Image 1 (cartoon, rainbow, N blue to C red):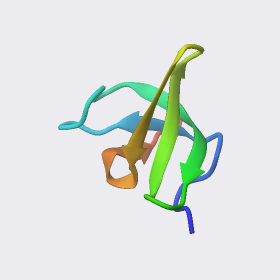
Image 2: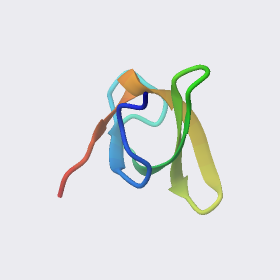
Image 3: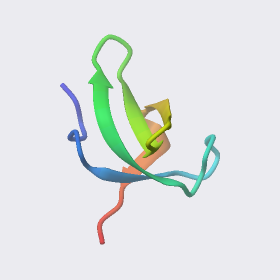
Amino acid sequence: MDKFMIGESVQIKQGFQMAGYLGIIVKYFEKNHTYLIRFSPDQELLFPEKAFEVKRS
């Protein structure tokens, strides 16, 4: 079961690639428990759930 929801805004934690960047979760992959996060219209990267936290305004 996924811990985060599609469409949530997240911030990448320190110690991970793209630390400090804000993105939006666009897909969850149950097989390897990773999330596809979109940073811009042409940039998306996969991250494990420990690499980011929900960013609330």
